Length: 228
Image (cartoon, rainbow, N blue to C red):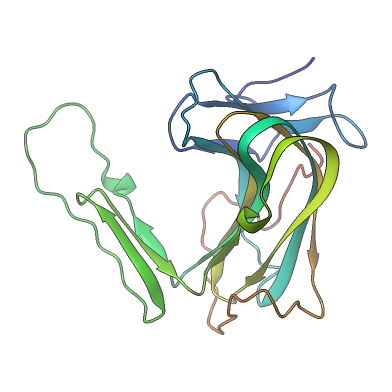
């Protein structure tokens, strides 16, 4: 079995997890849908009960602004005790985060004063903060479909799944991937994006009109390596 670990995998894809060293991701040339390879995410022995990880990528969705977009993929999973599913998230300029990345601290220090600042739009639904280290604004102009209401567990051969979001005109980044919570293993392959027209009425994220901001250094304006 050909499996590349988290520090190397298919171009464009990377791992995010809520605690380090809980998941392994990479490409698999023996288990795949259609043609090799596929992408995979697998829990490690020390995974926490509430742990989660995702194999993901992001891009500037300039061709999808003001439209409804559906992400479709084939996934396969094995011994998933909690749940797995694909996800797609819209990051809007009306939301935001200041996590002190441009002022990050390391080494050793006695007490010091730090601060984080964001604008809070009128459509804000939630503001989260933690000891001045980060603050995030969740705006209704952004949105996520992570299949939580359609979450999968147990074991299954390849099946087609999809997630759909509206992409506001002020969207800066579109993130997507496969998420695994807790123990188990899941594979992802043959993903595609399409515009839903006419849009589905039950996708309830609003589409405001404003000027998009696509000044995201290093990001592509399209997804890549969708079949790994």
